[in-house]
Length: 412
Image (tube, rainbow, N blue to C red; front, side, top):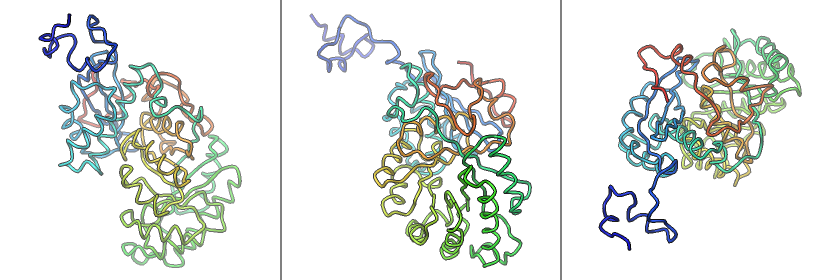
């Protein structure tokens, strides 16, 4: 006979919620990994080529999940602010916790900016923890995989980024020596012909200089690599159209962020004006924001930054929406190995993945932050079959490269 008084007791081994299952065993105590609880959330900022904000979610099952929030000095404090909304919760309830944080942090502006980026870091850590608790790779939590490895495109720099020949030489070196078949250069570099950069207008000599860079690099690497060029939201609408038209004859993989990110009507008109593929998306948050680019046809390639726009499941939703419009996904990424692997796990699980960015090829210790080796080989990132993200944080390396004043994580 069921003891109804005991069922009403919140401290009992089973509760009224258990009655929703017709097959429950009232004599069996609740417990195990599916009833794990979050016990703590900690952050540490690493001084990489960007300040990488690493996030760890601790559980009473002894499992720790690691994530990464998009860089920005306020994120660690924001994550600390969210800790009370997470402690005691089940780390497997990723969607519910994500929406809970969005709602609870609405006063701080949770639909964009540093707040949603901080939530992204927690969400990635929850995927790592959930994968470990359920003994499945993170890609399995976002739908299973289409590919065993993911194409990586390398963001390149030279000592003189305005020199077309220097850019061409670096492109050849990275393709031949490092094995990448996808690269990107900045195109918003000084030409020496500027009169007033604040007005965003490109004079013809400035456009000619940018065409020289595009021509030098694309001809140097030929068909050995795809080459994209980043404008960092620098130009007025008319100038962006003229620039895009001027490089149409060259094999440009995409022209990225040619106009400021706010006005998507202008972005659409620029995209429609040219056959040069246009990529946009890193400065647009969550699926709702990306929708205003995708639905009107304002982009040829969508470029969300996973640790910035909402995390792994949110990026999966963006990719699904993009797929409705037959738009490929090229993930922007300036992260440590943690954020990069989170992006790769989602890229493996979506049909329309084009590539994931890698921004740290000149940083000799990037891979030291984790115990695994050869994360990127010949321009590809293999997706591990280990639970969660498949990476093990190297706390000694984290401590060595922490931002001054930061504290190291607790041990697992």
